[in-house]
Length: 162
Image 1: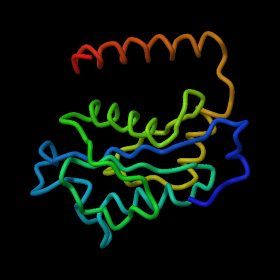
Image 2 (image 1 turned 90 degrees about the vertical axis):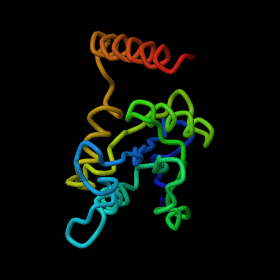
Image 3 (image 1 turned 180 degrees about the vertical axis):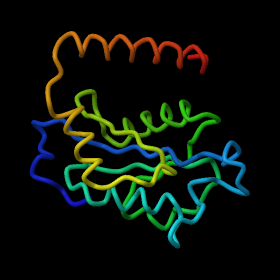
Image 4 (image 1 turned 135 degrees about the vertical axis):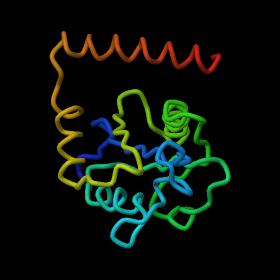
C-alpha cells in the first residue's frame, strides 16, 4: 500500500483484515468459496482489488487457513498469515493478534471484511471506514459499542479457553 498523508504517527492508522480461511462447506462447493471464480477471477481477487484502491489504508492483512499457500505470491503487497481458525471468530481473533505483531496498536482501527464477499468497491471501503472510524462517535454510542465489544471479547476468550 502506498503511504497516505493521513497515515501519520499522530493519527490512528487504518488496517484491513480479510478472513480468508473458510472451507466452503456451507456453500456446498468443492473447495474454499473465496477461490471460486467470478468473471474469470477468484472471489478474493475482486475483494483485494477494492481494498487496493483505498490509499488511506496502512496495510491489508489476509488471514489464511494453515497450509494454504494459494496467495503466497501476493506477500509483497499484503500481509499474509496462515493462522486461520476453525470459525470466522477465531480467524478474526488470530488476525487481530497478527496485526498487533505487525505493529498495530490500541489507537488504530481495523476494518474486517470477508474474502468471499467480493461485491464491494473502493468507495464502499472508504465510506465504511470514514463513517465508523474517522467521525467521532457520541458518548452513548461509544459506550454501546464498547459494552458489546467487551461482551463479545469475553465470550470469545471463554470459548478459546484464555
